[in-house]
Image 1 (spheres, rainbow, N blue to C red):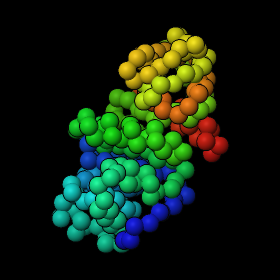
Image 2: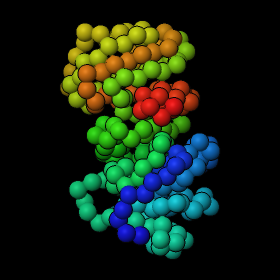
Image 3: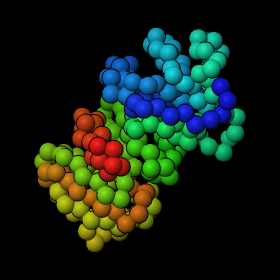
Image 4: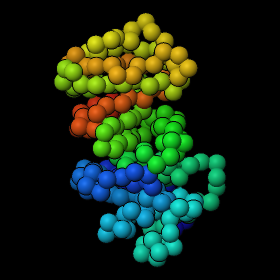
Length: 224
């Protein structure tokens, strides 16, 4: 397949080559049924009997046996090395929602590169998750319908100021930064409203809060 942008009307699942639970993958596909294999993620897809809608990447991690099982018109090989395979997918896939699995647990540098790409492409609603946590880049305004006691961590990827309601430890008047104050293990006291002066904030929630995260993120993007 030639290098181009592909648009989907349904939510999509990005499957990477990191740690990915097969049961969780099946669950995520019920919410985001179009499957995009991110390079080596195609190996797991094929081993699970799944046929990806697309495989995108530089193909340095996907095996020849895997590629042989996927039609050529679903393979988008991008040779350039200026972007990661995850970012290659973000740049070429348009969808109302992206859920990503297989981007944590294997290599820390790969996971960090995914977080970096998310905060640089905040216009695309994207949530990365595993069995424990989910993470997404916060839009400038965000409302989350959380129960009291829900863990919520704020990790700034840049120097950011913001305002909050519904947090046990409010962020009003604070400057958060990756080399300064961060917001690990804050806690909701009920529904949470957040506002940030700029992009660059990551939100981390328990994986069980996926529905709340999807609703809040799509609403912030005017999609629900």
